[in-house]
Length: 198
Image 1: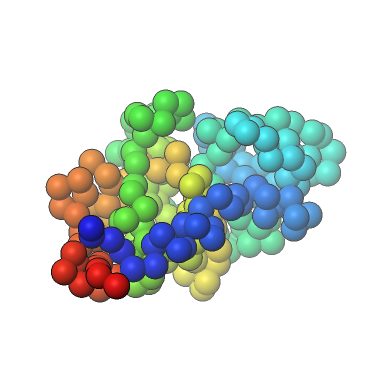
Image 2: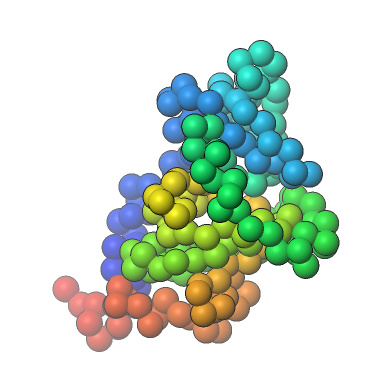
């Protein structure tokens, strides 16, 4: 059976982690980017199944559906993040809404993400509203992907907000493309059937 060395172990340890649990335990303010180009500065109070409860600017409490969240970072980092964000105007003009049905989303397989993370490949995430986020993947879980942007600035993308993922050469890593291309088989982490015994 073919596999990626280390993937199973990584997912066992990290896959069920959540950036929202991390945000709660930090007790810090986070800048949370929502659809319709709204950004809130808030503390995360509760991580519910489909929503989070936040306290905005330490005043107003609000329930935010997770599917409306595109990405988030510590508020103290936001001034550094903003200049690094680019926009694909063609995607922006599509005016895409949050995709409620998981089967309809632009999915990226863990088999694609894990080698990109381990090999520290510079990647470009394009989100549903056109934001382009460049960086190196540092963590991945079932719901989110954390990347280090230029200068080592951490930012976490919600997987449901992804429209496209490419490397510097423009190679696509969406499931729809990789089903046939299987780029993970080109990784040094890929274990061939004849080498997987023992």
